[in-house]
Image (tube, rainbow, N blue to C red; front, side, top):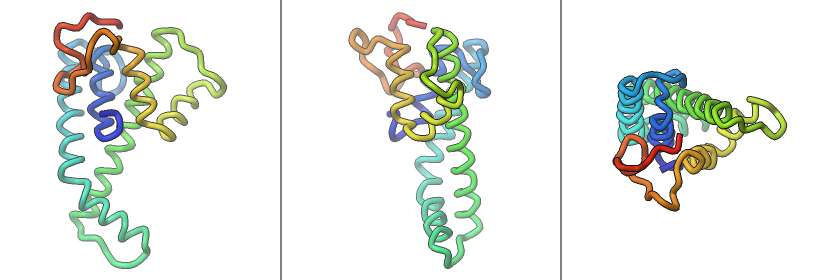
Length: 155
């Protein structure tokens, strides 16, 4: 999930801490609404925006031809969504580090940015493993926390 639907995976980790769309703590109801928005937009992006926007990106990178207006708009929206997901991953990682008093290795908060950009899947997986005991509880794709409904909270 962290690789193919990173928005959904980070949304599930955010739900464990009641984090909202800005990455800050909110009420459980607001966190659930935030997760629902992330879920819907990520699914729309992956199912409908991906193909036209990747064709447009390929056309633009080759330096010839033109994209249709719709493809260009979808490309821009998809790119903005990806940047926003990176922002959420960075904010969630910073929140977890502060919450558990985890020190950075070398670069302070820039480390969170670098790890998110260079290895998004690893960063999300690490946050998910740090906030759940997967040896005791199986992951669950179809819940808003990524854990079974009756799982005890580690956070």
